[in-house]
Length: 482
Image (cartoon, one colour):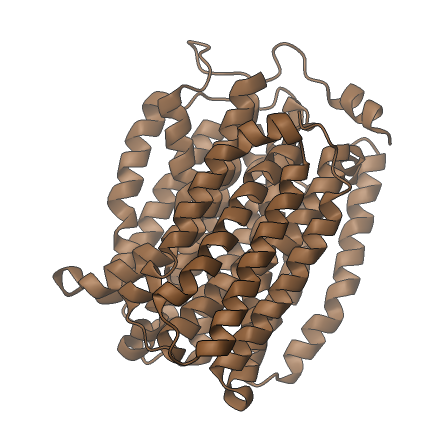
């Protein structure tokens, strides 16, 4: 199916996206509210990294259960994201956003009050499911209630929020653990979400317009089940395998993954050709921006997710930084990312998609400087020694991520806003979790024999290879960005 056919088939009428009774577009305060909803799930994916040693000490969890604290959230989140987008299309994105925000606050409270390690794992899985209800509504609402330059700015701000949230999560986690507010220790990293969720609910009721698809498709049950099985058979063994000693079930699961993935693709393709709306319509990949931009999100997010996990372990266990110092070592990355994301829209107007290529090059230089600092000075690496590499890596990422989001969604029709945003955030979240599983496993496997410094250098080299892939793929992006 060609791109023209996709547009014709899904082109919305003038009443495709229904809004609230006043018919108003997404206001600046409404945009702030949905971006708050986008920030919370991403912050919580990373906020636990610096709190894991304290959790281990308090709950006597052990490495395998600690891995599940991270993986349980990530897997539930990734598995249900597209379904969350579909439900928003059918029942109203504002309604699902409110439900997801409320559930996120309640499950965060459950995490903060968890009496033991396994109850924390269960609460984290539920928190991931709540995030999957909330996050897809953010991009779908932006896509349905903004147009032209306002949409471009909103998508750039979404990309900036996503990148900053990943870094800020670890900084905030370090500060909260060290502050030990009212003796809460690591529990504060979850309890802090409760008042924020209440504020988000109050704002969303007043500022977020209701939008939904005029022709909502029914839930694709076979596609949902097969996608869940595909992601679980891949991510659970990769995340748990090392800590569990690679038992037979991990190899069986990994062996089943390609067959389940092939079955998922066959079912979705058959439904798409029959004129139904599958969970992940293969016909969406006829859209040029999505077809070329979405694959780039994979190596970028794998590297980002793996780096944030590995650097938290290396700083705390290798260099013996406290939680605050470990978090603050990444502050230059957050600052540089923010500056680059502000510069991005002007640069894109002038240079188009080549901004992504330049951003990948700058990120590569930053990673190379980090490898040099670690290889030369370990185990006496100072925060000042890390600063140039961390800052350049963050600046390069800030030029790439917001623009990639904008390119991927540029051609998606409003009628498929929920499906398109679900596809993108599922790809991003799955890749972040996959980065923790793969690069994290590489680092933790090498550390006992090679030493943590050499293990970090090798892991950074693997991320550098992923950046090179991103740079090469960026040469195929449409030069002019809509």
